[in-house]
Image 1 (spheres, one colour):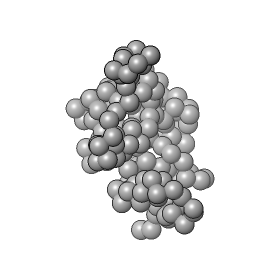
Image 2 (cartoon, rainbow, N blue to C red; image 1 turned 30 degrees about the vertical axis):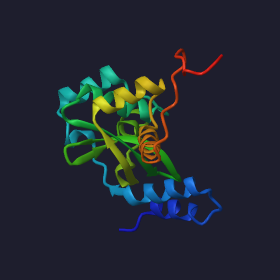
Image 3 (cartoon, rainbow, N blue to C red; image 1 turned 60 degrees about the horizontal axis):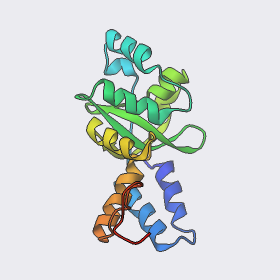
Length: 174
């Protein structure tokens, strides 16, 4: 089945992008995978769903937070996913993988959107709890895990040293 989201990403390649932007979109398209999302009741029991409602309290416009916290609530079973979804237009989005199925607690529980299983979803990256916690600790915010990992990988390939954290001396003069 053809992906509208991936076709939109390919359209960006026809723009006058700088080489790094072109490489980012090309590399992201290469790893993009269309996935189907199922209701949470297919992967969690009633007690677990109540825990999600009570502890996470999924919020509107907080997909990165919601998906992050779901991963932390069930770290042995759940992975954090970043990609895009096509509801009306393609949007950056975070959701989760549980086993071999994908769930979206933002659309299902926060927005109470009954049509979410019919939306197109594309995943770029899937991460365990330890990775997202480490990155969030460094950035100070939820989300953009894929971009963070991509940039770190590119810096390593180009042998660019990481930025010096604030509060440390860089060995230079002041």
